[in-house]
Structure formats: structure tokens, C-alpha cells
Image: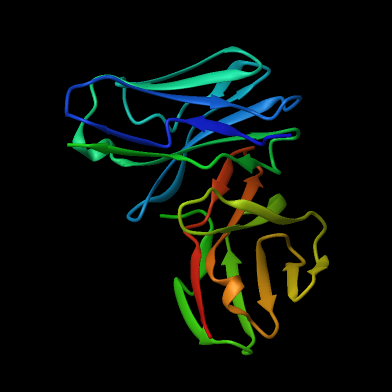
Length: 112
Length: 110
């Protein structure tokens, strides 16, 4: 298996632009997670899905962030409009049982 | 405030030394995971502990879950430069919330 795939690996954009991050989970995994990691705040859970249904989005910072999972093999995290404080590494992870998670390589987002 | 408190925050040691890092909480966890993250990569799962008092070994790494399932430790014997990385603990508390600690950043010098 190729593992969790994320794209793009790096994204540089200007404040106010829309950013879309993509994730392909490991086939057969029922859970998908989106995290944000910064030096100041560490690894933060933004939202997670079970069987394509959003279960807990309490970690989503504000309405500028949205996430979708239209099918079992694809998810997106969208930021619109982006702000400099959104600069971070965004990770997608998937798992069979919610606890033992397999992480993708991350997307490093820089908002200028 | 982190639900899972990890200590120390930073640790720098020489190759061959032993070390222990800690993950503590006031909450009871149904299970707890340890991950290692290397620069530029995502965290990689090392182990899951489930039973209070459980000890698991992974080569030179020894993981222990506290009797009350509120804390855990990771002991590394004869550390090597390849052990360098960010060690994260994570757990599912009784509210069914998944939490990560802030991590211990370990540097092993050759």
C-alpha cells in the first residue's frame, strides 16, 4: 500500500486566496483525520470522519475552514480566505480503529 | 493547557546513553499511543498500550502504561543518532476525545 497520500506537499499563497489541501487515505481505513501542526501549538486535531461522515469538527478554527469527504478514498480541507496565521503543516491521517493512525507526509502551507 | 503533558520538552544526549520520557494526565485513557516524528515527515506509530501496568518492548524501546492508565513512559536504552526525533504520546480519554501531547524533542549526538 502507498500509505496516506497528501497533495500538494508545499503551498505558498497570498493572504485572501483560497487554499485546498487533498488527502487519499489508506484503502479500507474507516477513519480520516485532519491535523495542523505548528511549533507554538503542536499537533492539533481539526476534524475527523468515520465512513465519510464528519464526526467531530470542534477543532476547526473558524468558518474559513471547511472539510469534505465525498467518498472513501478522498478528502479535502479548504481555507477561504487564507490568512498568514494559517501557515502551518497540515497532516491527514487514516486508521481502522480511530486510535492507531497512519499519517501522510503533510502539506507545508505558507500564507504571505 | 495540554490534556497530555509530556516531559521533558527537549532532551539532548550522547550516543549510548539511556533516557526516559514521560506522558502524564489527570484523565484516564482507554488506550495510549506513542509516535515518533522525524523532520519533514508525519508521525509514525510506535506502539499502543491498553492495559494498566502493561509493558511493551520494541528493540531498545520500552513502553509502560501506568496502573491507573493516566500516564505512560518511554525508555530508550543505548540511544543512537537514528533515535533523534519528536516523540508524541496520544490517547483517547473517557469523553472519547483523541488528544496528542506537545511532544519531547530528542537529539542524540554521535
